[in-house]
Amino acid sequence: MSDERTETVGRSGRLTMRDIARLANVSMPTVSRVLNDSPLVTVETRTRVLEVAQAHGYAVNRNAKKLRQARTGTVAVMLDFASHRHGAIGDPFIFELLAGVSEALSIRNQELLLSPPGLDDTRAFEDFHRARGADGFIILGQGTRDAMLRSLARRGIPMVVWGAVSKDAGYCAVGSDNLLGGRLAGEYFRMRGRRRWLFLGDIRHAELRLRYEGLCQEAAEDKEVTVEYLPIASMAFNATGQTVSAYLAGGAQPDALFAFSDTAAMAAIGAFRERGLIAPDDYSLVGYNNIPPAANFSPALTTIDQKTDVAGALLVEKLMQHIDGGRARSILLPTQMVVRET
Image 1 (cartoon, rainbow, N blue to C red):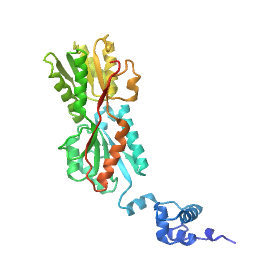
Image 2 (cartoon, rainbow, N blue to C red):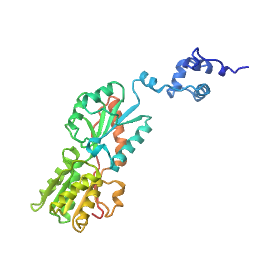
Image 3 (cartoon, one colour):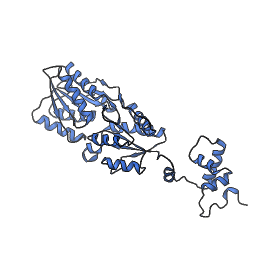
Image 4 (cartoon, rainbow, N blue to C red):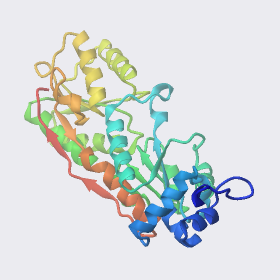
């Protein structure tokens, strides 16, 4: 004799929610609540419904489920590939941020969609959001896209940005106090008696421009100090090292270097070493981000700490506030210098 739970179900041979309700002796709304993890169902009922579903190989159609819901439960996380040569990102700092965001999304049962292709302008972002590709966007790095981000904000697209915090941007940003970071680097150079400062980076990026401005503000406190700016075409490690090597080969002799990242600082140290220049004897150096390898590099890097341990959770929290209809406010993270060998 066949058991009640193994009888034929549905004319198509596929188990439906109606079949589950009948076999588990509950209503269809109860089945829906169980499959959507509602807390309004007792443990006993939930167990019985799930046993029936599993016994007949029932699988939730997640795409159909998303279409029925007000939200997709998906967040798109966008990386700034354009700032790296051939779109290859190798900076550990970015992946620390990404790991923090991923963990925070997982805790909230949100899916992470990493850098979907084709989102190159405001219209593409807007179309993707309207097509329910994602509930919102977390953008790791403003890069040179500030104008586009401001445009997205005016259109009400839910997003939060890791980068420079600006009162007039119109969008929520989370980041360190980049201006203060630049001033801290300058204070350190002055304390070490350095006079010929070099800033390494691309000041078209809002974050890096603020760091450069902070450095210049501190330099203005001493008439004997000069600041030179060395732009880079790519944030990639090898490209940065080549840029510094070419600069030094031209006869430049800076006695202090403020690099836009710890990775860039490491590349620069190699270029300086090729010229027989060693930190901290021949020059002082300050990086940015305080990535884990910075403390174990030789020489250990003096750097600006950005508190990545809390950044991911804050980015997700701010985005969820926006998605829920609230007003997410920008926030500056504590910014401090970590003095090591350089």
